[in-house]
Length: 482
Image (cartoon, rainbow, N blue to C red; front, side):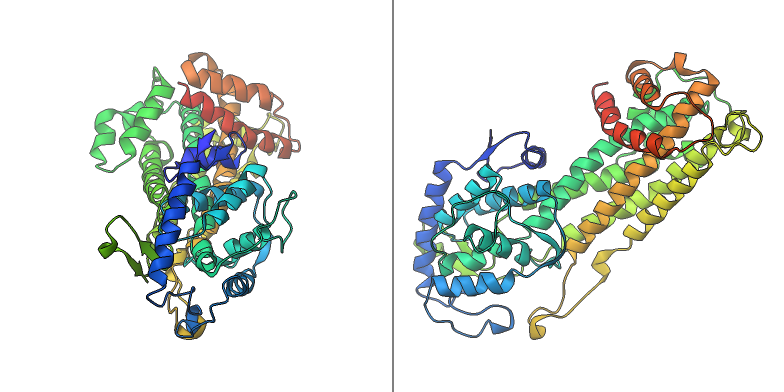
């Protein structure tokens, strides 16, 4: 059981999303929220509060009648429109968990009954339907408003759910004023990037042995000389997997091998920075307005702000996608070396020797297509701008678009690494160098070769590439256990 009380981590979020562990909200948290709700209500009686006693957006200066539930429902209904493809269930679960964890911080003034209902929705896996289009990095209003309508019984849940009877004006904007969906997507992207980083180490080490690489590029002194974060860790991972290095075929390798740790270090560094920002946001109270509460009545306040503007998150998402684009060309170059007779001493494209055999020729094309997708996804989303709501919001960071682009880049990167795996396994086997592999790398090769087989004849390679893609998670686990 994972407790959601304000300290949820990225890996815990992933386990909740994948139904590996059940989540719960402790009674003590609901009690704290009840006290915070009472304090917020007292504050709101003495000042105008955005979205509670006023309209929202360009209607911020319009007072609304004190009709509580009716105003709340109008706000939630009007903000629930979305479009596009449905978000996967695992992402929706992660969104619900993020929102619960944020609400635990106590800055929303929300009714504890709403939080309890949200926790029950997650516990029962009675999920709302959430679609991809509707967010621009200033709050996932449409996704969370749709979730609220599901809690109220106005939209169906994936399984039956007892609807809330009422929803007070104190809780409408407070509930939807969050980027929980974008944060959840970013968190799950981080977990996938961690897997791919480990899988990349295993596949790159196989290519190194297949091509009789020069291990000097990964020496501690060489990695340190790069003076860049992440490189020493990437080089150390490769050294551990490569084990006793073969006699190098060249005094100096092509960049595809020589700078592998450098470009992968950029990816690891960007992922770490993204993870740090996501971890902070999972537990941040960014609701607008924000209730500053506490024992000292004189220090209590209702703050209207723009802290929900996800500029830093968008920047980290863009940076990570750019890092993947930079290293993707190096991965493609290694695949080209694996297919090149001048480096392998074997027929072009590792064909079976039949005249004109194409071997892995088209795998290289697939890899190039993946690189093109990664490059396309690396166009910085944060460069965009927009004016909405009659000028009330004159900019946007487009974090939701940045995370969608990163998700696309991650999918293409998985395919790209799988393409290299096909070539590396085939060349290690054909050159008969598997016997010098040790430790985790020997296990990686054994598992991959057992799955991919030994038939090098020209044939339909789609099943092979699908198996190679699926193998990457297993390879990452083997590498992690080294």
